[in-house]
Image (tube, rainbow, N blue to C red; front, side, top):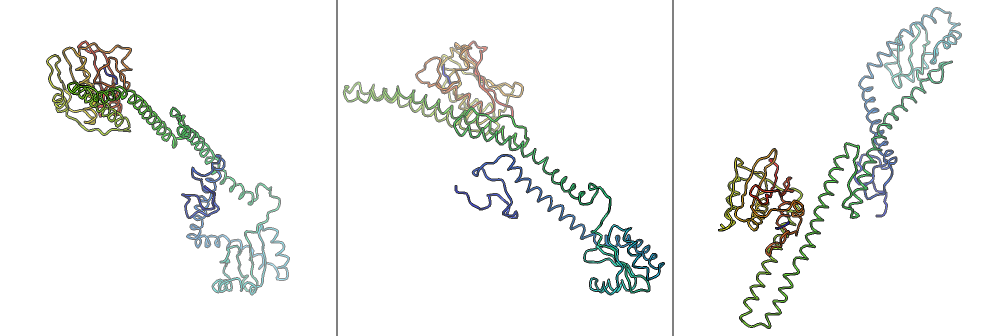
Length: 464
């Protein structure tokens, strides 16, 4: 029964043009590889710069929009302070004002001065100078770090600030504004560094695993598979790599078996043909017709081998197969027309309640032809072709009443170039082709005992 480059200073490819040239960027696969810490530093600098640009830009824009309101709000806050200072000066004799100034300085954390009003002219705008002469509170527009107010009826003005120059005695170092700023900045950098480090570390670790698998496959270790990875972004890549490796291994193994088997099967007919050609020169005219007939049979056998080998290799190389609805009655009718009626063996078809099957018409037709031809060679009197729906699959069956297939040989029979019973017209590719067609459809092929007493070959195909 039939069986089946030099390093340059140019920016790395892919680096955005808007990034400065000195900023590191992840290198391509062709460039020298670094550990995960170097990768972390590069991405960390990029993230920090982006965060800083967003935060500084956003705060600056917000300050610009709200600066006028903030200025008025701050001036309103300082009115009370200047009013109290003004009362202290106006309630004291003018000759005591220098001593009063020194006294008041001890109560403020920022500088306090009593200055001649004319000394402030150069630092103020015309509008601010007129307001100061009228006795209004003036905040310096350039840096908003000083406030001035003229004492009524005098040529003196109280100057407060620079407010950025605040000195507080007896405050612990940990409560200083400078320390607060340092802590906030440190927390900003750490808040970015910690999650990014662990993310980059896991990402780099999983990529190393996949890289090791890819390098093993490149070196010819086709049984290498990617281990389980924990990064969800990389996990699909691992599955795809394993699937690809399995398909490549399957295709190469099939091609190896096919090449070895074809080389083996082709020897006998070639030897007979060589012998026949030599005999043509020596035999009588009457025997030449017999030799030519033998040569024609060997040529047909080689053509048969070439056609089946090409079909097996072509379908085996397919990653997927295009499927479409096939009317079962039309399929069975076409198959019935292919096989001529035989007096000793009847061929029957039954589609039952199944009207359509999802498959590739050409591939399924080729598989069924092989099964039917195989059954007709081994049946005693009857071959039955049928289709039923079982769960989520359509099952195509070809039953015969022959000797069947021993249980121990039911897996081997689908291997390429395997024949349990040597047949002059067969090469052992028919059932192997059937299994390849079924697997490319996402199904399977097998053989069991038939209710007719012989073998029941099955092709299981998904419903959708």
